[in-house]
Amino acid sequence: MARVDLGLSDEEFMLLAPVSLHALTERLTVRDKKLRYHAAILEAAIYNVNRDPEKRPEPFTANDFMPDESRHSEQDEMKEFVLAVERGEFEEPDPAQVKAFTQGLMSQFRMKQGIVRTPLKS
Image (cartoon, rainbow, N blue to C red):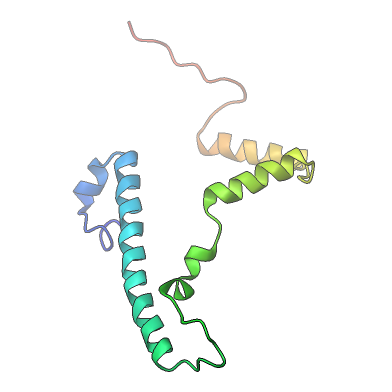
């Protein structure tokens, strides 16, 4: 993605802070959305030229051809999840799965059970 979509060299990619990479990918998302919208305008025009006004009295709009726009945003999905938890609709995770997940993370990062302390340099 960094090389093809963002046009970054390996060196540029390695020098990027995560927050900068996130900002670039967000900007890429905006650019892609604009390109899809331009195509959707053309699609709506083609469909409207050939539309039967008796079968479909309302003309098509670009938004009719932008399926991503009808989905909930991540923020909306998170709100729905929180409300479901508050209503008690969320099942507690299996303790064995939680333990296995925790152990997997700890082994991945070579951590021992408990708090890892690093000495302060003075």
